[in-house]
Amino acid sequence: MSIPGMLGMAGALIAAYAYYPQIAHLLGEHCSAGISGRAYALWFVSSILVTINAVAIASLVFILLGIVQIGATGVIYIFSRRYKGMICPYHQAHPYED
Image (tube, rainbow, N blue to C red; front, side):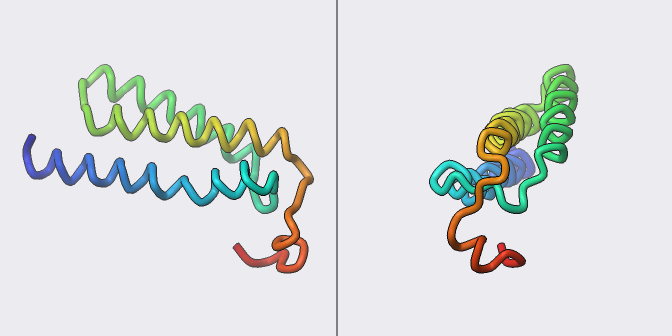
């Protein structure tokens, strides 16, 4: 794999890791504070469309990134709807902090 390809793969893996805190908090605390279900639904649809393009042009980096985004945004959307209105003790005490 070329250096640009390796850098792209590293970027896709960093994107996957970046979703971890949001998903862990959502699933662990059942807390949907600050999550826009509508935004994640749109992000999910856009990720599917971009991934279709990535498959069509056979771009492995963008296929991987698309799979990560489809999975992460899908999980966040589904559980943000499931836990809608539920807020953990931390966000109740600090409503304007992440």
